[in-house]
Length: 550
Image 1 (cartoon, rainbow, N blue to C red):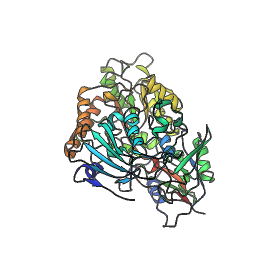
Image 2 (image 1 turned 180 degrees about the vertical axis):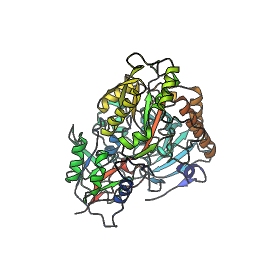
Image 3 (image 1 turned 60 degrees about the horizontal axis):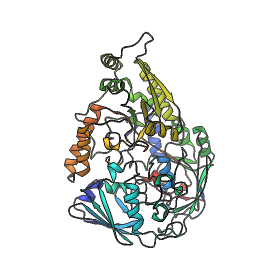
Image 4 (image 1 turned 90 degrees about the horizontal axis):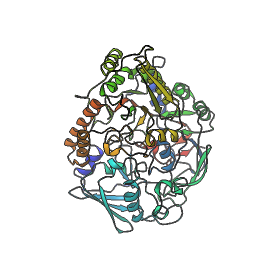
């Protein structure tokens, strides 16, 4: 039973307490993939030990410490230790309490009542109340969150009958809301520090005050962020660690060295070069885990800027899709950690995925050349048809290599590509503010319910200049808008799934974005570190369950 079924079909009240991705590169073996899973085996149950400092690696260095207007994963890795959401997930992808202890949905699905945890304090000592949730929902989630147009649009108003009760009034049933109230998507911010300010420039974006297990202490730019244990944390006994030190190490080889020498002992989101995984796995002091990434169901994409007259022609976009050998891309650049995508919804999301009647663009350079000729772009005397610029998300070396693979692929069919190498802030400005790009490559996160993150590339109302991770291509199709908006309001799960199938079919037909392959992420950690969170959002959740073996 999926999360939305649990919420809206037969559930009136909840009050709980408390890939086969490995078609590996020829130089690697299937044993590597099996080894990754084996190396992440759970340690024998032991009694947690309190105390100690954990040195973790977060890369790239974030530019802010709240996901209120930027949902980059490097922000979430750190911020979720300080800021929290109303709900969380367990390992079976079921909803669990966090700042809310219980919730009830009305019969018509248009009212949700949350009971809030009592006795919770912000890190500055002020009490956490329903006013903070009301402010966060109406002034932050709905107005500045990059995915708000998909996720929180149905929230019409929020009532606060008392300090520990919040009532969400929806314009229509919305199955997606519940999957977006965790510490990644729905961080609750302190009203007393944000009300009446510019959310985007508020100084507490850089020194967050939250309710979470760790308290922000220091940010030494370019070096580290220091968090310390919250002695007044509501989850009694947690966190186990006294300090978290998130270091920033731009060089991938240096990150691997820090893990191998024990200088750092926790690093999520593919921290080492993929070519180093075998060596890391053979290190008796280290382990590699694939757990904690299911909430994202990430894929790597190529996005077109449709403001460019050349790329406005669908034949050109189809040609570029045919020019890229996606399986070779996975095997050579990503060491088999992924599989070619068939559309904008990964196959792991079985309640929504389909490949039936979804257009596919198999690797076929001859077909690509034919389409480019037909579009009116023959090769010139120098063999070049036209030139494009490529921006890419510079999270780590593999994304740079990914961009280079695409450059070489398009060169073979007569398209020159200029790769622009920027840091993440520069990339975000070029793509989402200046729209200074022709193609943009990187990583996209649909999440467990793809309405959360899967529509932003395709919905015209997600065109939001200056807002990261939105519709930068300028793609707009009234038929696509109609499908997306029907999904957002459909209360029947079966009908909603049918609409998701239509969404995939039209997305692949218009092809404003090429979903290249479904990505598998990994975490490297020291074997003396216990309590790794295996929930679907574990890699982006707080580290309150981690403890160090003496």
